[in-house]
Image (cartoon, rainbow, N blue to C red; front, side, top):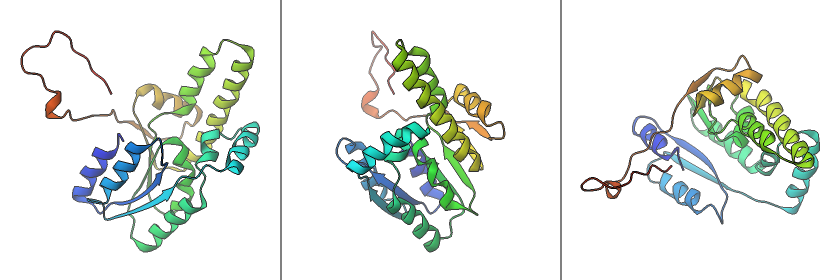
Length: 209
């Protein structure tokens, strides 16, 4: 979880209230991170991700109405309620939302300054997929996905007070379709553990993130 270090640092100076969606099997790293948060966050609410047959069907049908598949899959009444409960219980000064599919919950934080940690500007990523498609069918599906994410980002990202992106390209892509968006490029930084450090001069150097 790339934001875990950032959250830990914030928790040193602020009371951090975390609302997380645990996607369960296949996302063990996320589950471990959520468990770790309980040791240093002021509060942690966990909503378990549920992929029902009805939700799968809804995602396929709504795709024809230009609603991104991953957005529908992450719609949750329980998560919305958790956001409302947190606002009612604690004096929230700033809400930070992470990952594109979670931007839909910005509506629950009206009256609170909000920041979106975009991670991946889908209007940029989906355009790359469209450009790389080599068949007519793949091209049409990729175009639909691209237009769906443009529509989604225009609707929700404009509600945020500020957007964080990981690259200038993502920042440009977002402001291209939403000129009023305020973006800041915030490159990802990591701290290498001690066991990653070699003694002596290695023959090859490999960076992996």
